[in-house]
Image (cartoon, rainbow, N blue to C red):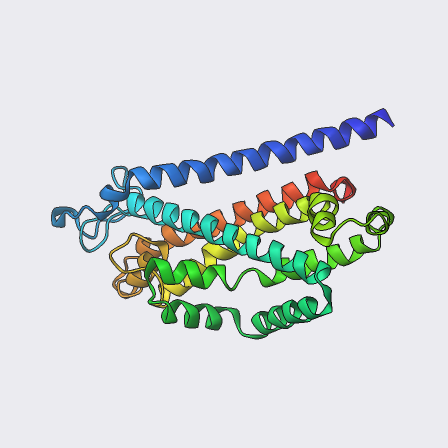
Length: 279
């Protein structure tokens, strides 16, 4: 018994250590990208189209811009935008999911219809339409990503709340005359915290990836900004000339960041839910 307990304790420690290392890497990229924003825009035609080397690990582009600084700055922008939109989406999901289950059948039906509508439309199409309607740019991307990523989490929270409504302590609170809002925030919200935190973290990679996708398609951030989507879109015109580094390193960094956020979310889910740590 003690051996098994030590094994699971050691496994939880390793999971936590790896998640902390992943979070530290993402934080470092975010901070360095903010510091290197001006360096990512600096042009020098005397060093244009240089292949990766010791001085320029990711090479330079056709304007002589350092691709390493440009990649880190673009990824930092994507991470910050992803965190902002994921927080907004998670807040929308929490409010709608909670209200759907505690404010009567009409509210439940309205929220369910909204969830089905958002999930029934192809995700990237809805994101492009909202972003374009809001004028594209930073504002359009924030609004578009925020309004298209809440549905799955809202459905999960609604299902959890429906189960909580049948629990004994909620029934007792209702018989004691407690109001619906009191029961929702006093008895239900604390039990929804693990699902909410896990869902919030797992929204980060989706928001980052979809921001990069809509920017790559030309409906997102402006070309003047060093965003990953802009970098990848511009690199498509130069791949045929053998400048593979313009797309390879930014693409790898984007995929790595998405996978790290996903791993952190899965780790938090397993650490919060004791039953899943043995899986």
